[in-house]
Every structure is written in structure tokens, then in C-alpha cells.
Length: 375
Image 1: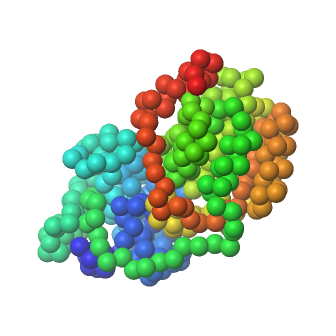
Image 2 (image 1 turned 120 degrees about the vertical axis):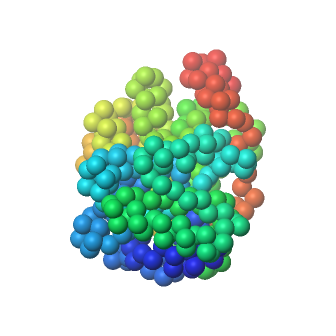
Image 3 (image 1 turned 60 degrees about the vertical axis):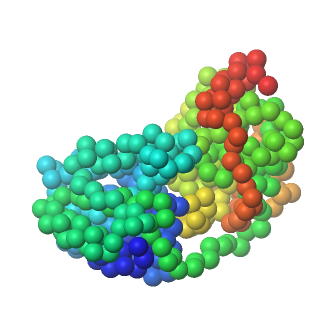
């Protein structure tokens, strides 16, 4: 289905969401039409944030908003969908557009398999009627589904379109870039060199893929790395959990700006606990690059100021490799909770691979490494 046709069928003038590669055509169409215009389009920190923002839009205008997201974000909307939007509470109508990663019968990465199996069931459990759009869905079918949805929306119910892989087409070309010069893979290579044999927890997306390939190229094992392939925004909390239980082991977290924003409350918990053995590196390219490159709010906020306010005793920002190496070494030797924000360009190798080990193998080897009997 042509993405412009889909937008016409939705008939909305306000969209908020978290980008998804399955919805790249929609994301690019919205960026081409609106950019980041708070009257019409807001890229939020997480999907629950989107649902609440959409509620505010409806309260102010009486109109129906659209929330777009990957199906992995369903967990983040359960609370606002059940306790804010639902007809037994405030009856606030929202149209959800959900990219269906891990659809049964379609090959996908391990973090999407279970989520894909329960995608439609979760909507049913939340009393949200849904319609699936695939490559063969006719425009008339989607229009008929939307006509039925309008009746439900008028009653204050939420509805959802679930988008299969490749269903939306004809995306406008949108170029995402910034003025930074350092590439993320090179940044991670420098982190790996300084961290040595210390355990590393890396965030969702290309960062973990790049760390895996860096270890491969160096002929190293993968036991010291926990690759957080799913649960975006939680790598820093995983690292905190490890650091608190292994107080004499220095632990590194390689995070991303979109992930740090998604659950920024984790920084407050980290700062409050102040583990002396945790080094938190946030690679900030101001973009959701792994799913297409749409901007995050991180290019317009002071992440080091946030960290300092949360109780990190050291928080610095760097934008050159010389400064990065100096601050990595200082953090390694400091013996205090440290945050290093690294300004990063948008871009990755086209031939970037994926981990060749399974998630369960990664977990087992990492646990063995922490016990001291792994590679």
C-alpha cells in the first residue's frame, strides 16, 4: 500500500511515535511532510510517553491522534492504554500503528520472536480491535477497516493497524545527518581497547552488532560482553545490576542516546546508588539510527547535566578521539561512577553483520565470565 494512501485513510493531523524499521515508509513520509513540528509530529522518548502525549492532544482538540511504534513497544503502552485511554477510565480514542516484527512464519531476530507471537493477543487483551495490513491488502479493505474503526473511536475506544513487513511502500527519500565526525563503530573500538578484560554491557541495535564484530576482528572471545539485543533502554540498568553484585569488578555500559532517553529514570537510580565500578558511555548521534535515522531529542538536551543532576560524580562530553581516549582512561582509573557522552556521526557499514551466537549462548558465556571460568 502506498504510504500516502495509508495516511489519507487515517485522516489524522497529529502523529507521535517511536521509529521502527518496519514503518520506515511512514516515518519518512511524516518527516517529509512535517519534520519535527510539535503541532503535527513529535518523536517521543518511549511508547508510553507517546500514548500520554496523544491523550493530551485529544483533550485539547477533541480530535483523534495517531501513535506509531514497533510491536516491542506494546509493553510500554499497557499502563496508559489500560489506566488512561480505556473506555472504563477516560475513554480517549487513539489510532495505534504498529510494525509487526517477529510475525510468525517470517524470519527475524531472537528478541522479536515471542513479541511477534503475542502482538495481536496483547491488543485483544487491552480491548483494542486491530486490522492487519500486508503487501496484498487492497486500499478498499483498509478504507473499510477505518470506517469501522471510526465508529469505535467515536465511542472513546482505541484501535490499531498492525503493519506487516514491506506493507507500506513509496517512501519519500529523507536524508538524516549531523555535523559530528566520529563513527560509532570506531568509538566502540576505542572503548573496547581501554576496557580490556572488563565486562561490557552494550545497548540494543547496531552498537551490539559492532561490538560483536570488533571482538571477531581482534580474535577475541565474546564472553566479556552482554549484548542487549532487545529491551531498548534497559542496558544501563542491566549494567547497574551487575556492578552492584560485583563491586570489585569494573563494568562498562555502551549506551545510545535513544536508549538513554527511553528510560531516563535509570540514570537517577544509577546516580542514587553511585556504584564506584560503573562507567556509562552514551554514544549520541541524535538519531534512532538502527531503525532508519529519525531524530531523537538528545541533540537538544544536556545529557551530562542530567547525569550530574542525577548524582554522577563525573560527567563529561567529548567530540574528538583524543578527548575520548583521555576521558576513557581517566574513567577507568578514577574509581568512581562516571559518564562519558560521545558526540557521534550518523552512519554505519552497509555490510555490518549480526552476532553469530544465540542470545542464550551470550547469556551463558557472560555469566561464566563473571564467575571467572569463562573465555
